[in-house]
Image (cartoon, rainbow, N blue to C red; front, side):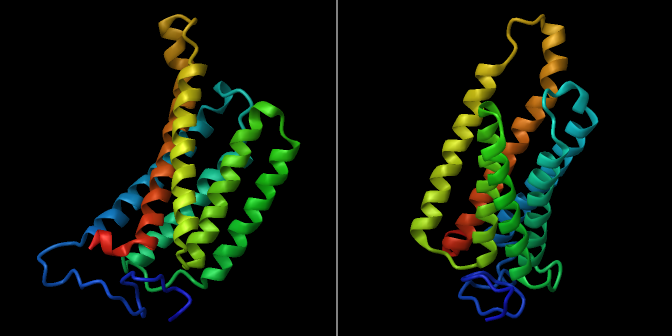
Amino acid sequence: MSNDCMPGMAMPGCPSSAPAAAGRGGPSATDLALVLVLVLSVYVLGTFAWRHLRRAEIAGYSAFADGFGCVAHALGMIAMSLLMLRTVPTIGPLWAYMVVFATLTVLFLVRAVRAAPDGRRDEVWTAFVHASMVYLFWSVGVVPITAVCLVLYLLFIAEHVRRSLREAPLSAPARERVVAASPNLVGLTGHLAIAAAMMLMLALMQWPAVFR
């Protein structure tokens, strides 16, 4: 099995127990799921661009956090999706991606330790996302690890939604509230897109038979 192989996935040069999509009259459920991951990842890049353009309206905006958090993650997911869709023959050695995301995990953990309490959760969230990417590129599915990751992503989704509802500036006039909240709302949807894409990719890696 090559460095680019993932268990159970139909990938270039990799053995797979999944039936070929050819002969079934259309794309497989796996391909559709990967396209959805790709769309979500491209959307995350769009949220970064929007937030960067509106950064003056975002208190405590960090180009580092958005760039090395959202953008780095989205690019990694796009590369993985294109490889698994056979759009590109290779994306290089997977260990290189593991090193990059492991380094980013450490950097964001250090930022979490040094951050103010109200910003610490976001740094920990980003570190967890990057650690999950290391696990994905490791390409060895361990059911307990995958299950814990999925539960944590569900908890993070619930927490992000709860925080968004709690922190909505309801006391501001409606016109001002819409303008002020839009960059943060876009950021929230970007986080939700990251979580959804990661959950899909984790499920694809661990239980490929479900998507046949």
